[in-house]
Amino acid sequence: MLRTTHLFLAGGAMRRLFFVSAAPMLLFALACGDSGDFSLAPTDANVSGTFALVSADGKKLPIDAGETLDGTAEIYQTADEFEIGGDGQWTETTTIALQSLIDGTEQSTTSVSTGTYTISHDQIDFVRTLNGAVNFSGSVSGATLTIVYNGSRLTYARQQ
Image (tube, rainbow, N blue to C red; front, top):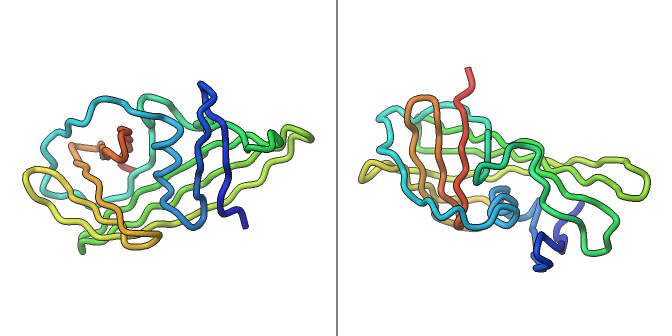
């Protein structure tokens, strides 16, 4: 089971990603950087639903997050689903692929984070309770969930 991977991202900066044992959204924050837009539309009263990631700071899936420190594999974010329940609970399921630069084979892993949320001041206040406590904000406007997390703007579309 892959727990920690060091990688070099654009610009040569070394970053550290925690896959299975850490928050899935961390991958986006490290891969995408600072979007600079932290504003959120006022959230709808009904935020319940299942949402699939469309983009992170404007980058569409799959998101290239760099390569492993040993240079043997590329790391890609291939899917992310965020489910908001009507009971104040949420679950995020993230799929990450490692593609070998040696033989082209691919391995995927899925990780899950869960937490609670409340709605106040026209936004959703999320608290991650599985894989370490972290607070972040979001809003649901129509069929779009927007999350601001660690300097990145994540945009999700409601699934039917």
